Length: 305
Image (tube, rainbow, N blue to C red):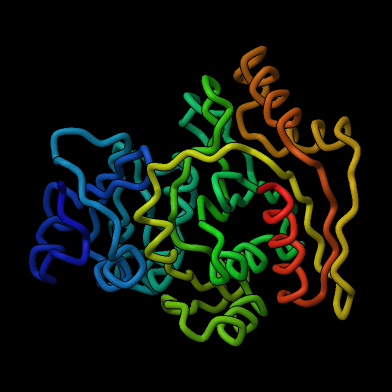
């Protein structure tokens, strides 16, 4: 079995990042990561310690985070994300190098992993059954995901749900959870034992911070899960947690609109999404307190046994 990332010494980690790349396995995907940014060398052992390293003869994605060449690399230095030597988006301030790596990895999966139906949704699992949480920014999706995985649910992904068209099952990634603004403090108070990276202010998404996935989620990353619930969450200040049935037809349309490659996959995308909808309860969740929302999810899991 290949070693875990936390079995590398600091020097060995830097040598790989500076040289051929750190080949990290995340679910079914392998990223070869290169960077000379100190923030990345510090964040990876903290947020990816249990992830397995892959053999260095193949990677799905060769990525790099580096300083922008020229004067901009030294005066108010900026960094850029590269995949196969090309940059798909604009540079960011150097302080955001690890966040840019995470966002860039998400971009690679959303834009290029067409062997799966890729949905912009969090997904958690309990007893073999998966709950998809598609929702727009500000709905409390990542906050709820972080709370659930700190209370016994398995993290598959907080951002991208991968559905295997052949089996219509969820394929896990188990990467760090991206929290924003007030959610950071909420989860720190809700789960003091959770491990966090460095909080960054003034990004395009506001204040951001990544939470390490629980070790069990990483250890079980190869376990697929069967879709069972599609829950559209909405946070309401001081609101009582409530689950309500949601029309399957509307849920199908909303889930298709949240899929990055539904149209590209054509009939296969339609067939795959139909299987997911047919296998799932479709629900709306409004909540104001995380413990109440977690209790409702636990009730769903109990009812499925």
